[in-house]
Length: 106
Image (cartoon, rainbow, N blue to C red):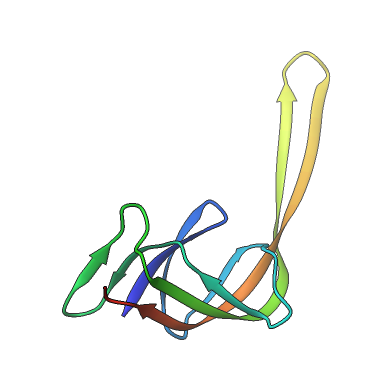
């Protein structure tokens, strides 16, 4: 079974046991995150598609680690104007392990 979840403005295809890196989110003290914004849930027999989300579907994940992504370097340049700037950025990420995909049938 797999699901497509939405978090941080992005969509992720996840299965049970997967480890994913998502943009930093508020983490409760229990270190268990529940995603209610499930866009699609499918297994070998059937597929449920939300409009935009599936009612009653949840994906549960455990916190593995808080990390930082790769450094991204941006260079701005304007010719003949003696203008150039170098800018760097590292995104804060959260590494999650998908524990359970649950689809409640109504």
